Length: 115
Image 1 (tube, rainbow, N blue to C red):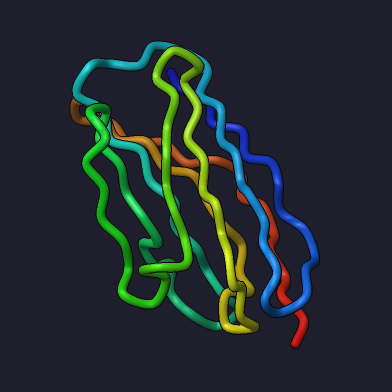
Image 2 (image 1 turned 180 degrees about the horizontal axis):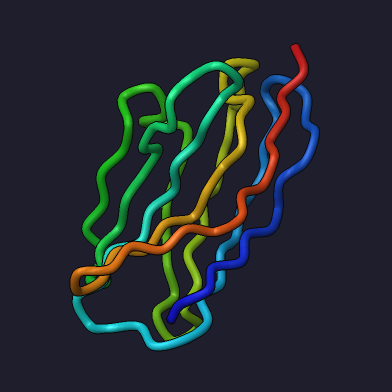
C-alpha cells in the first residue's frame, strides 16, 4: 500500500507562484509514474503534468511554460512549481502514482488564485 501526502497549496494573487510537494510512503517500484491532477468546481479532474521515474515529462497545454514538474526519487517526492498563476488555475490539486497495476491518490491540496 502507498500513501501520498500533498502540501504547499494556498491562496496567491494572479501572477504569483506556488510550489506543491507530494511525498510517497510505502513501496515504490522502479517503473512508477507520478503526476499532478487538478479538479476545479463543476469540472472533471484533469491531468496537469506527469513524470516518469527517469525524468520524462509531459504537460497539459494550459500549463506549458508556466508549470514545472520534478521529482527526487531518493526522497520519494514529486514537486510542481507553478509560476505566472492565473485565476483559472484555481482547483484542488491531487498527487497521483501509478505502478504495476495499481493507482494511488493523495487527499488533495487547494490552490486558489485571486484575480
